[in-house]
Amino acid sequence: MVAKIILSRPKIGFDARCPKCKTRQVVSVPIVDYNCSNCKTHFQEEVQVSIYFTIAKKLIQATAHNNEVVIVGERSESVVFHTKDELKPRSKNDDDIFHTMLAIKHDFELQKNIEVSDITTCMDFDYMVSCTSCGTCRNCVVCSHCNKSYVPKKVKSGEKRFTCPDCGLKHHRPTLAKLVDGKCQYCGSAQIHPTKFAAAEKCPKCGGDKISPARKIPVYKLVLKRQPRFELEEVKEDD
Image (cartoon, rainbow, N blue to C red; front, side, top):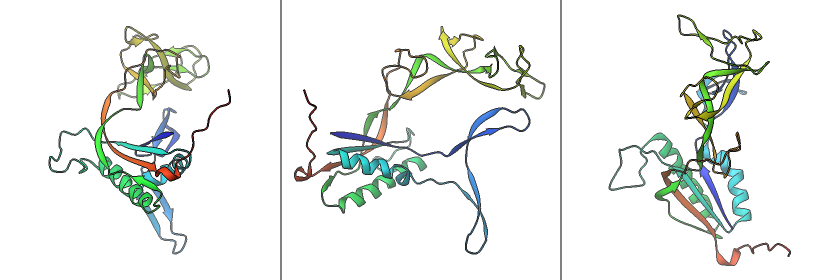
């Protein structure tokens, strides 16, 4: 019974609509405005979501139901590295991942019933893969009302005008297109963002089985393992 947890920088996002062109898009929350409940002082702060906080529940569940939990976090692929200290963070993301692992390591060492490994750096496989049969077209959109695929017009300022040529409505959604020779089946554009998803045998969007192989990436790694006397027994299924 081995579980794997992948650390990453969480993002808080919400659906937004441009008040001018009415385009819907998902944006992240960079700054939060709030007033102190005690002194009523007004603050503005950048959103900094704790990685440890966001995976705490998953970590507790994984250690409760498994004898071993492997924790990995993707490292920066920067060419800048430190030969004398391979663990030294190369970026802000590296630093956040590394210190999250340090906190986890410290907390579980205090529990005494779990063997905690050293933090190491190694190569692992990216958990995200791409479908080579479909993707999101960056050139055309689909009308939300009549399902007509069309390329929005551009005015002199470079602004796109989303008006369906069939029904005249402006509501639209991104085009999920099957690829024909690497191009969009509707408009023939090569500006395609591949469908990405957690490793699986088939694409969740088109059902295709042409999946790109997972690439190797540098990661930090930490292993939590129950001591032999506390190991859980394997649950055997009835014949």
